[in-house]
Image 1 (cartoon, one colour):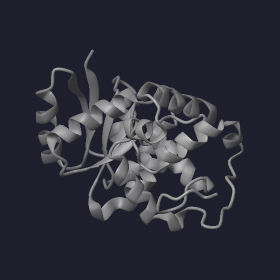
Image 2 (cartoon, rainbow, N blue to C red):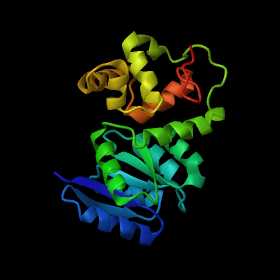
Image 3 (cartoon, helix red, strand yellow):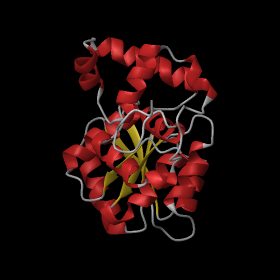
Image 4 (cartoon, helix red, strand yellow):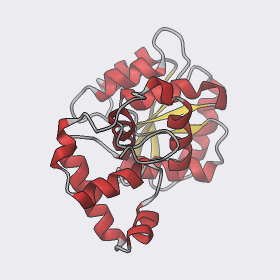
Length: 225
């Protein structure tokens, strides 16, 4: 079954370019388009969508608020934020709003397609190293004097799960975590799944944000304790 994608951007030329790239893929189809966040939300009432490619700066309703409203619904599609280097603060807000990842608008087509598939599967954070740099850059927005994690649910994690969570927050992929801890990738994936379940999180992006918010990991990738 094809991945059903909605393109949300106020620039028709960009939507056309993305549509052409996606249309050439046997496992993807563009099922809807919107010129702003309000139109995107309206489209979702009548169209089944798996992944939303969401611009951030748009008229009427921006991509961050649209993402927040979309992700608050049950069975919401995954949202992939489209941003540029000078809009990193919007990407951060988008992740906080529930987006499953973000990409730069000038991303090579192959990377965009890989990102869509990754977000659809829920298997990985898109561009984890970029996510880490983004969170480090905006660390002043997060608690700066936390010595112990303040999120009660973290107490439910085993020592190994907490170790895995810290490595996820530092931007490591499952394969990199497996190599670091001398585990199989399947075992790491199991740990990540248990972390998501215990903490009530949607995906790895939310694991990263929570780890920084609670002080489990500090800006720069270090452990808080």
